[in-house]
Structures are given as C-alpha cells and as structure tokens.
Length: 119
Image 1 (cartoon, helix red, strand yellow):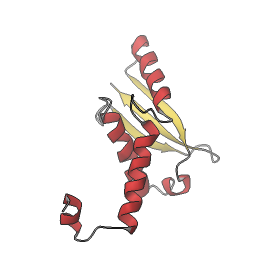
Image 2: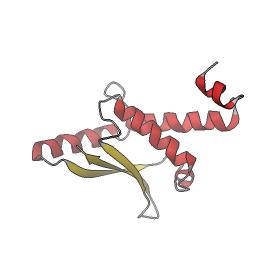
Image 3: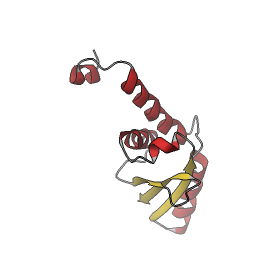
C-alpha cells in the first residue's frame, strides 16, 4: 500500500486520478533539461539574464493553457498544478525557498503563471 492509501483508506480512481493528472501537467509545463516543457526555455533565459545582470529578485510570467477555468478557481486544482511545477523545478535545483507561484489573470483572455524568484 502507498502512503496515500494508508492515509485516506481507499484512494483510487476519480478525484485522486484527476489530481495525479493535474500534478503531472504542472511537471510537464516546466519539464527538465532532458525533457523541457513549455516554460523551460523562458525560465532558463530569465534566470541567465538576471544572473548576468546581478538581479536577485524578479518575476517571470508564462502563459499556460492547462485547464484554465479550473486553475482560476484558486482551489485544490491550482494548488496541485503548482505543486507539480515546484516538483519539476526542484529536479533542476530550484527549490520552493527560491520561487513562489501565483496565477496571473490580469488579462481576461489569458491565464499565466507568475514565477516570483528571490535568489
């Protein structure tokens, strides 16, 4: 049995499978150096440029297309997606102490993720 099953009894199918999909979508959004996602190149460029300029606090905004209506609800869906993003970043040596995430819906036509770095 997994820890999840031990904790909640019977955690199979439905909601739990949906959240596993959302978490994986967050991972895939960033990706890794071996398998970059949509956001990877933009993050890499921003980190390189900020480092070269000596900037330690900055924000990178990257548009996402994954289930934007659900992300805009600011609930468990968004939190799970962000957890997937943080997981992907941690595999690249960028931990949650270095970056916070926020959903940017200032433009009603797009949904973006703000990566707020403080290195």
